[in-house]
Length: 147
Ligand code: CMP
Image 1 (tube, rainbow, N blue to C red):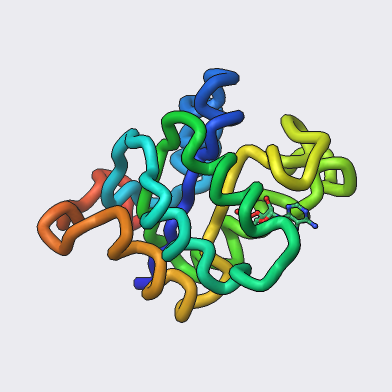
Image 2: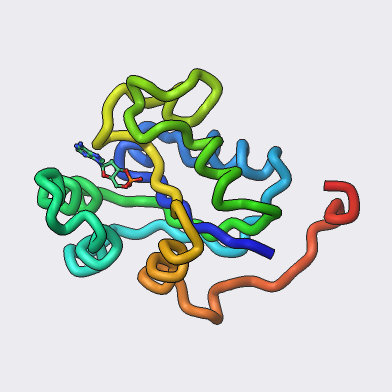
């Protein structure tokens, strides 16, 4: 089954949106495989956002994502990478559809509440920055036959 990584960014944590966001993921029927709160170090952020290294906003992005606690989680489900990207909404909160996380809670492009892996390659690059194999939990929910 496909997996994805989400980060609820410092603005999402400070605005107490962790429960709201994880609640949406649970109600959608996604499996929470692992989760933790942490403050990212600069080297974690530089690795995570490596793909944006040459972009003009890279330094600000690293500074922002390391500015406070984040909530990191691995989710599992059918086509979960696309499902979570759709639930997150367009990167720029001012353009995101109402009903999406960014559409409902963000108005900016940097402070846009959530990060979600955009491909399998991105997930494989990102998740080891936050989780060891031992932290990925193997269990079944009681409703897996009907979700
Ligand atoms: P995220 O999904 O975490 O991945 C990269 C982040 O870069 C993105 O969300 C935005 O927060 C940020 N980003 C993308 N484009 C811009 C931009 N033009 N200016 C500032 N930040 C940006």
